[in-house]
Length: 410
Image (tube, rainbow, N blue to C red; front, side, top):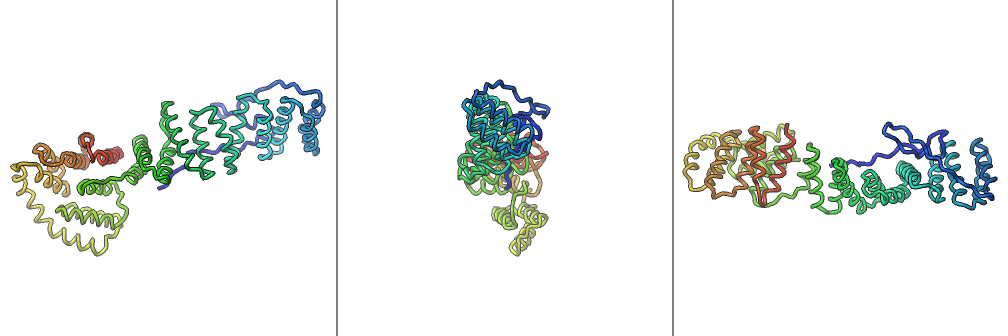
């Protein structure tokens, strides 16, 4: 299965000719850079001259910029001195389009202690985006961690931090972040992203957390009912129980196109033949052929066998029905209904499943499951949903899978 990443890396930080903080400016709703805030600074007397010379070097893109920067840094005394020098560094880095220097300057602005909360936030986002874009996951992690700590319910930051964890091969730390992002989305009245749910499934399986994988798969198929999510749900569902339950799970995989090989088709057909449903066994073997899945010599032999039984089996259906109706319990009606369904006689199958429920003496949830299948095959969706929802006990999980499959049908 293929799972997608939910993190979109931001564009380059470099903005030619921009002011010091414009390279990291937030974007407004129309995608235009928000103006950088102006901040009054008070430079120390000791640093004024050197900082003025540095500013002139930046404006002129002078070749002695590095020397002027070192000289200004050497005499800086105050927070404002260091802050303004770092902003000039950012101007210069933006002018020469040096991405690494832009990031270093932004880090220097933060380290100066002179940036306010809003500017610090913008700078951290810019640094993190640039670092993630170049695969510098450790630097991105540090910045996204600080940003997320300040805004713990920001979904985008949680997802970005999770992506850095994956980049650093810290999947154990990424999974809880994805879970938090899902909860934060719900708290904000939004659907969790489909890709996030798929990432949770993948990582939960890798960490052998099958319960979490199943929970995420169910949520994904509920919010985004498509074949891919249904396939994930079936893959992580550990459907067990008696032979009848396992058989109905195989029927689900067959009807949803998820039997993966000719061997799977053959195993289902053999089971159906063993249970005395030759019509359904024949349908499965023919479906394998249409799907290009070879069942080999065994499949060919089985098809010959069931073809030889079908005429007699069909003829027996009408003679057995009176016995099923007069029987003390619904066992014969259940078997007869399933045989009719195998031949595509869904209306008769529905009638006999209902009879089996009325008579009792059978597992009601098995009957309800198969009744739902027959309704679905007959195109009676509402009735199928009602039958599946009535299933309780050990078969409830299987019925839920059938409901998920039904949700994808047109």
